[in-house]
Figure 1: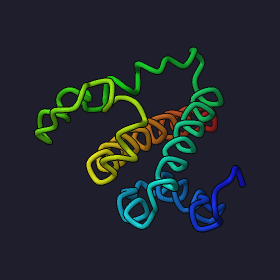
Figure 2: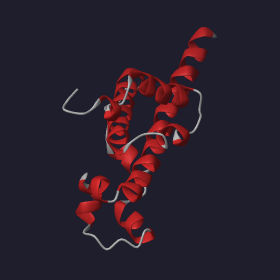
Figure 3: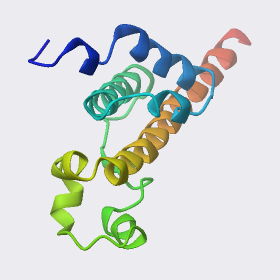
Figure 4: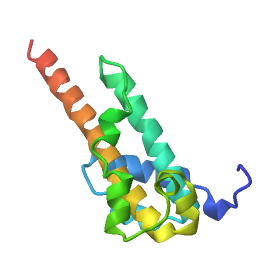
Length: 136
């Protein structure tokens, strides 16, 4: 378990619940609010990996991280909104999630909603392509 206690490990059912919410076009916020900080970090990584996987399976072009991150609120803007005076690289890295879990957790949750929307766009595009093939 990577040195984490069982209560800090993101469970299979939690991962599945995240994916189901994405597929059903439901907000992730209710699930994410229930997670501990270590679980939230794992959920973020899990969703990012799934987003890349769905991209590879549904898109003819190479994945570019910037396609997703440009839709996310820039860290500098988020810091200003939060009246945070820490160095910008502190906010961009993972250090902030441990020292300011509520603030950083909120940004992680917003970013996960962006990732979920990106996955949905792949699925909607794949469904539209499938529908056009069946009409042929």
